[in-house]
Image (cartoon, rainbow, N blue to C red; front, side, top):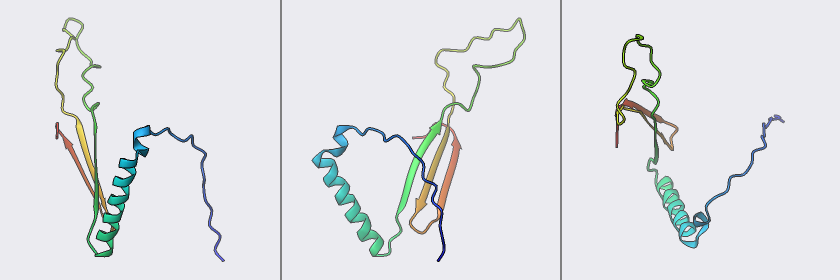
Length: 104
């Protein structure tokens, strides 16, 4: 018999908004899971996609400059952020995209 170790960690449970457990949300989650299980049984590929962004890729607030130069920045400077899109399908394939621009 093979003995497997489990590394369990103690974490504080996070509170969920009361709206998350409303009857409407529970029914929607149940319908979503039923639909996903039907897709998986029929052999379709399901891809889960998530997007996030990092806005601190341009550190112009901290810069080296000459003593006599102006160090001020415009109030509404628009800097592109690093946008990251990751996806995982039910076959274990991973898709990943990074772009250095403002995306929508």
